[in-house]
Image (cartoon, rainbow, N blue to C red; front, side, top):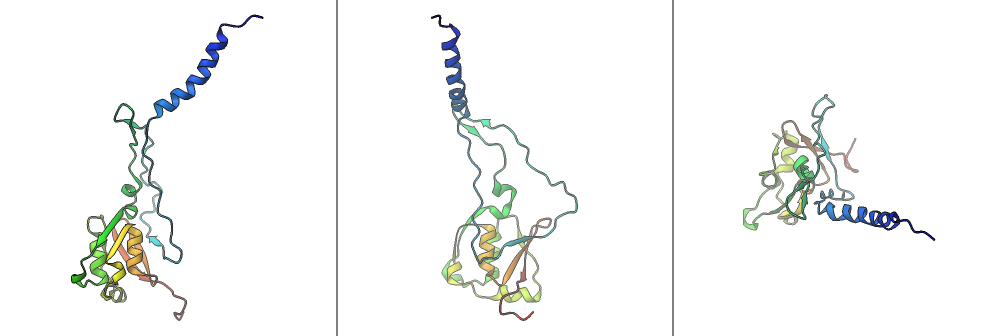
Length: 177
């Protein structure tokens, strides 16, 4: 019986290729997944930005080697592309006695967004004293913090072009139609 000298080489190549791919892959930081939706909590409505269907999308690019065994993802994080996904943690001192508008303004500080000039109906929301449960929020996404502060009677509307956060009343079960 004659053994081919290439047989051991073929077995070695068969094992070496997958092991080489694993060794060279390194560590790539995964993108954080979006926070799960909370049942019964309103959603954030995004106002139309433009009629042009060509939004800027990040290009797929290979990971960047930043160390001998470390590869870094060169794409922007989800919270950098969608500012409402940035994770925040807010603590408001008890002695301030803030209202809902004060808390929303505080939450939006350094977020890239600001509150809309509120019509008279929304001033009712803003004037409410801040509930004790909202003196500490987070870690939570910016969008979920706004939903929590507004409560189920209000819909969050986002004007991405002007980076403004607005609110409108929602239809509740007991409301007249």
